[in-house]
Image (cartoon, rainbow, N blue to C red; front, side):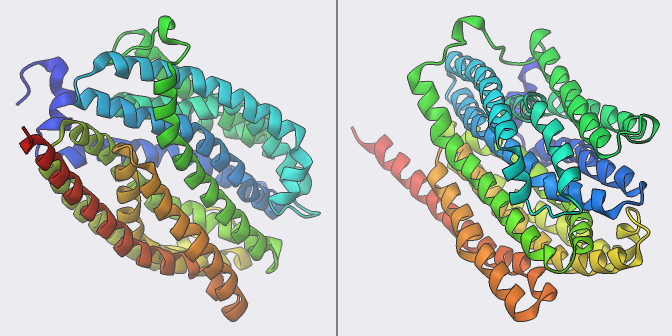
Length: 458
């Protein structure tokens, strides 16, 4: 047991039984992410109540913009979090604090750049998202507001990552919960009472993210965290910047590639009608419930892997990986069965149009087959990021998105139509699970051997 109350977070990272540590770090994140998934589901639900399927399609078309924001914030959030965890494992708390402060400053600067660039190129962005005559105006309205509030969306995402890197998982989910409650409360008010429709959904999302970011800042200002940012470190040192971006840029590119694949998917779906885009959007958002489970376990495992890599505890790393894969795979298999059994019922929550329900149920039943595989892929990728080895993580994403998924989307869509389109991702994830797990296990074993040989030298 930990010796001091304030040491419980470090005890979880360094000594707690692997399965229990994975659950302790992952389950609170999953609970928070289940609430956070309502950011997308609530917008979809309330826009669906307008009985305007074109606005429903527009929310889905605009989603890659959110993914780009996450990608840019991920560049700093993942890079800084990886370095913080490794510094804590190596007992270098001062460098960890410098990294945290740099992360705060870089998040704000990057968000301002995203806002400016997005608004300048807004019409081209909306057209590139796949919006056509019936959805162009709605998509533009939603994207404009989301871009203006990018500092809150990106800050909410990054600051939560910083909290998790030091083991303060419970604090990180408070921001998710606060933001989502605010979003849920404001959606019907803005959409219906104020008559703002899709603009109201976007505004509620921005304000919700602002509330979530504010909660994270509150914990830092009140001294509830292991680390606190400092004004004297506001201008980052070159070596810290280099280490943040060494991990962060590949992590950001990974999310960008996912966004690109999403756009390709939407543009192919448009050929089957804009109602198909709406149906696919519903299916993908429902599937995000499963995505948040594996992302929660993967994100919870990341600081565990980073801390123990910094401490040179490779045996514990293997035990954590083994426990994590078993837990996430079992959980996702259960969810897959639920998606298959009740697909029309779930899709019917968001629309009364029978055509949309039929298409959405078919898509959900095909996409659900990613669930037993994708959790392991994500856990391996984030473990490489945690260890400061972003090239390996990026190679997994590169093979996954550019070599397998996007070509399969194009090929299967051409050969089998819509049925092939929705089967491309399950095929991709099944292959990538084997590849990524073998790569990570081999890397850990090699690192352990190299560290042992270095220690034996006189």
